[in-house]
Image (cartoon, rainbow, N blue to C red; front, side, top):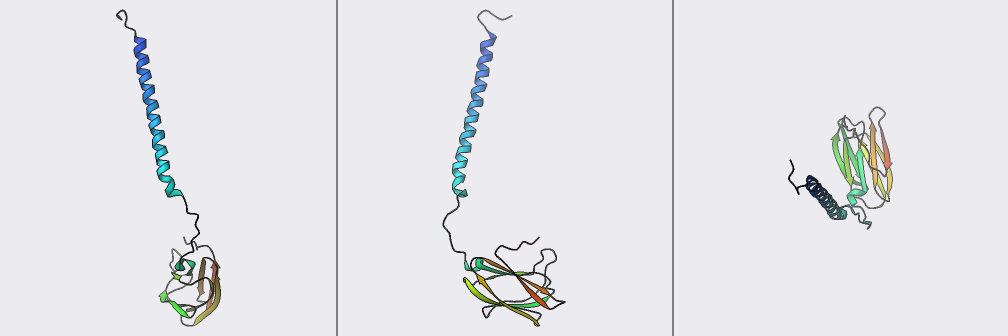
Length: 155
C-alpha cells in the first residue's frame, strides 16, 4: 500500500528529469571538447601561402633504374663527377640508386658511363624540380634517359 500524500509519479519525473539534465550536460561537454580540439589543431593544418624556392638538393635527382647488374657506373654533371660505384638493380624496388644533385636552375650537361664502355651524354634544363631516370640495357649497350617533373614511383 502507498501511504497518503506519497505519489510515485513525481519521483519518477524527478529521476527522469535528472537523467535528461545529465545527458544534456554530457552533450554540452562533448561539444566544448570538440570545439577546443578544432581550435588547437587548426594552426597545425594551415599551410603557409608563402612560396619558398626548393633547396638545391631538391631541384634534381638522378635515379639509376633498370637493368644494372653489378655494373660500374659513373655519373658526371657539368664536368663534375657526382657518382661512381658498382650497382645492381634491386629485384623488388626496380632501382639501383638515387642521386640527389645540387645544381641551380638552368641548363646542365649529363654524362652517364656504364661498364666503362657505354657512355651517353645529354643536356637537361631545370626550371623547377626535375627527376631523371637512367636505364641501361646491357644486351644492346644502350643508356636511355627519362625526364619528368614528378617523382618516380617504385613498388
